[in-house]
Amino acid sequence: MIKRLSFIILVLLSGLTYGQYLEFGTYMGGTYYLGDLNPGKHFHMMSPAYGGIMRCNFTTRWVGRLNFMFGTVSGDDLKTQAVENRNLNFESSIFEVSAQAEVNFLPYATGNKRQFFTSYIFGGVGIFTMNPTAIVNGEKVTLRELGTEGQLSGNHPDREPYNLTQLCIPFGIGVRISFWDYFCAGIEWGLRKTFTDYLDDCSTVYYLDSQTTDFSGTAPLASDPTMNHQPGMQRGTSEYNDWYGFIGFTLTYKINLFKKSNCNNFADPRMIF
Image (cartoon, rainbow, N blue to C red):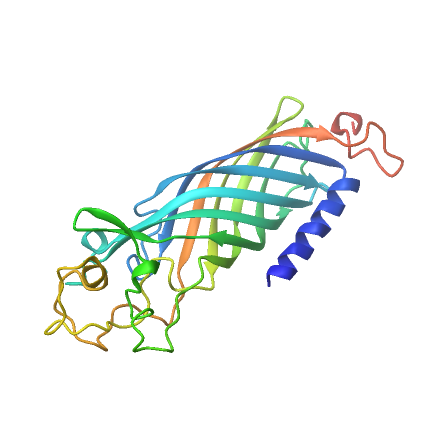
């Protein structure tokens, strides 16, 4: 899958060389997560997010795009009450790189006084990094290093430490509007389907015996903060992988690649009419 993403990015960059015009800009908004600690509340515990965008407008309908996104997602049982008497919490930084395609519902060209507004959908493929942490006894700890579901205990060879670099499928909707000759502003909301259930470090079952385990250490408390579960009891739901999403504003600046075009005049919208 990583090789496929690299190929898609190379194809996009090739298109950027011969495309009609480019747009470079920024993304500002928020990010949130859906998973075991937040099964279904969109926009819950949203944190600031920002990033960069590079678009190539091939036609008035089709757009290629590269995204670079930064944000932090988090969850807390005490706030969502997803599972009683579990009391898990987590926070994870997200860095995402993705290649996407946008499809405009209306003909659109930045700087064009007639084709200045459109709604659109987008989809693609991306890579993101994560690193779930939690507050245990007032201290911030890195959860993967603790093996909270027995990954490092030696008693569960089938449970290996999860990878901190993962694939995702971004998709969503948005609207944008052109103003002046070279600027485009928009609003969009997108979700990311992931292929991991450990964005929140919670997926399967407990592995420590609360009757015999010494819970004075950080690792046992990170695994079972309430200290009242037995091995094999459900800790998370491994049937469904975690998701995260972004919602925010975009602002891009247009750069013409060619002053003149032998094929059409799409490169300079002011020449269309």
